[in-house]
Length: 272
Image (cartoon, rainbow, N blue to C red; front, side):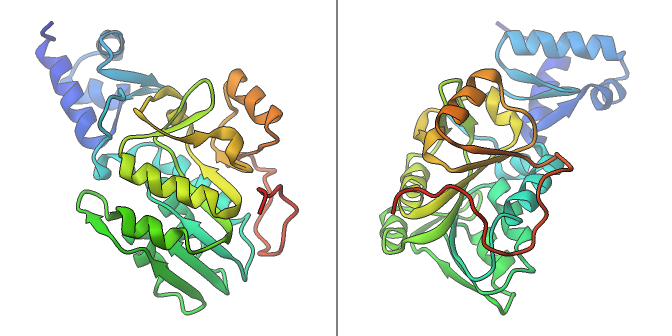
């Protein structure tokens, strides 16, 4: 079914920037906020968009948003998540950081740490951390994905499997109601699975828009992580799964969340 021109333009804009807001769209198209809300509701019914507070994001399918667009989606929330996750990581430890715009925010927040060994398959993470003299960076070899600087392929997986690290920082493109962690590229998922299998403590970082998305490739399950850093309370079903699995949930926007002191912390660990 064809859609009206304005709605088509809204979808095109959402695909280019990742997220659209009612106020911005009303100003852009010189119509009322009520009209835009109706447009967004229509597009959501057609599964072209997914409603979020104050606007909408592109609905999930079999292909992820462009990297530039993903950086704009929930940007403030990702920064808060990155800072909160970095506060959990002590000085003098080893860690994996995998592919994703949220994991990149964790790397950005690690700049003041000392004595870290970071293994990554994300060139953007490596570029953020290598200038810091007290952080050693190892980059996995393999094919560089031009769209986002991710390093994928068997060579990358082989290097990851040579390590057993203290922490892993991983992301996901979607988290479904059953607790499945999902992504779009099976090669990226293979690397994420290797990272999870070779870390003593796994920290999942994902903003709440991931609760409303889907993706076709399974990384693993929420119960495989020890800590989940997000930006709001989990839906009831996911909260129950996390509680039953012993997963520590940290709300990055909670003012009572622990500040970093870069010391050892008593968080649950995966079996060695």
